[in-house]
Image (cartoon, rainbow, N blue to C red; front, top):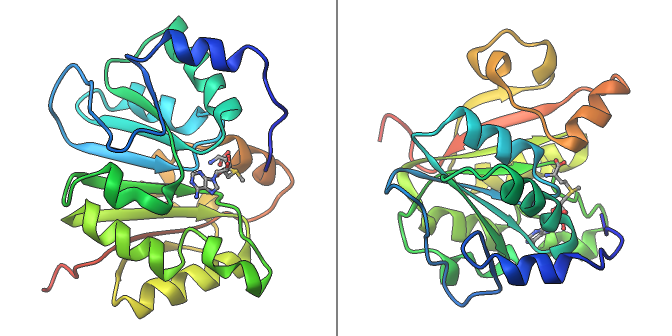
Length: 215
Ligand SMILES: C[S@@+](CC[C@H](N)C(=O)[O-])C[C@H]1O[C@@H](n2cnc3c(N)ncnc32)[C@H](O)[C@@H]1O
């Protein structure tokens, strides 16, 4: 998804270095409190992460997105009604281990990631082995990788990829919006999720850990 360029975005971003970091070599936390850190990769315009930060003031959240014009929409909201536990980061997720320290993150969210269906683009999928290797490093040992998608092929690919890493599937859903699990009942939706659900498409989801609870 490429968003149209927003002429006001660059100036707004430049005015708020306390809220948003652009292509830093390392992410420097600027939260009010030191508390567990959760990271969304490919935030888009930020509906999910803003709501999560509102609902969980005892956690810190980072919205990571490579398109400035998408993240600028969330920045506008954060400037209007700031949440002290939300920071924004313009960066490509392909170098997460430079941005974050080992064991720094307790939960990672992949919401409706671009599926990159062509085999020659496999390396761009956010559940390709090179990404999982980095998630394993920056997540705490009991940290969770949560993924939601409308795309059956990308979901199957992601499960296979995680399985190759020996990941443990703590929760799995083939129709999250019609499940009655605790996850389904407290699910916070994204912009894409709302669109797909409105068309009646099932939402697939998984919550996985690199270490099994039995390890
Ligand atoms: C299909 S959109 C989904 C947006 C939002 N998560 C939602 O569910 O409404 C995928 C987003 O991921 C971002 N993205 C894709 N690959 C990325 C990467 N390697 N690093 C950072 N962001 C990425 C894209 O720029 C795009 O905004």
